[in-house]
Image 1 (cartoon, rainbow, N blue to C red):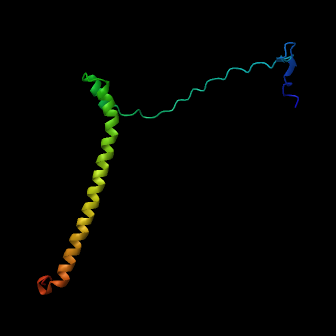
Image 2: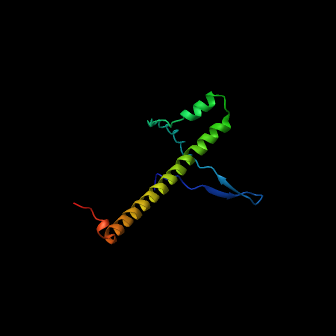
Image 3: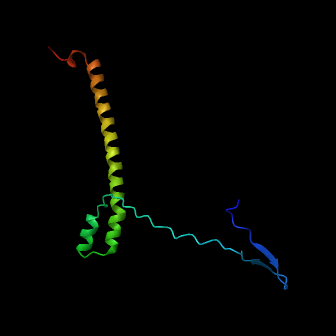
Length: 114
């Protein structure tokens, strides 16, 4: 408890307002914090399209469109690819089912001779 500063004293002034009296020994100001310089080495993002766009004389609107629509286009193409993969799986299952039914119900015409 000795390391804590003594509480500020409040006095009543003659005009009826309250005021704080300064402490006898104000605490020494803390030393300024030393900035921590931290080097984190990450690969910079690929900005080739933006650099080409600016180098070709296009404005900031084209760069902003590239930044916005680039990831959006990747997401849309991924969704399309997933849908096509699901449709291909369904088509393969249906074809297998048709071949199996034809083999089992086709009589001697659906079986291999050997």
